[in-house]
Image (tube, one colour):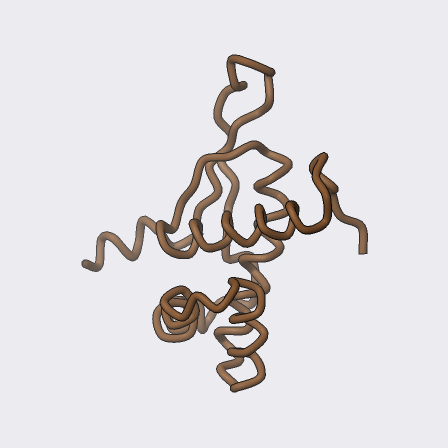
Length: 122
């Protein structure tokens, strides 16, 4: 599987992606660069798929990815899995913004697809 190294060591990259995945799940939206968002999207989609499976093995795999953050895993398995039960994939979207001023990196918003619909229901 090809992936982007993001100019970091393996441990730093895994930590960065796990932190961004946690932020997307908890806040349902983050602002980051395009390359980071594309890598984070893969991880978030995998976590939500684990949540839809609902088994103990899937829960343990999700815990391993988010570094034993039980609050995040509970939100995935109890809330997000129910919201996306009829969807087969593509749980996130990337909305492009403008370039960052310092280094011209393209900034984007990475958010869950049904974020607006969920807020309307509440």
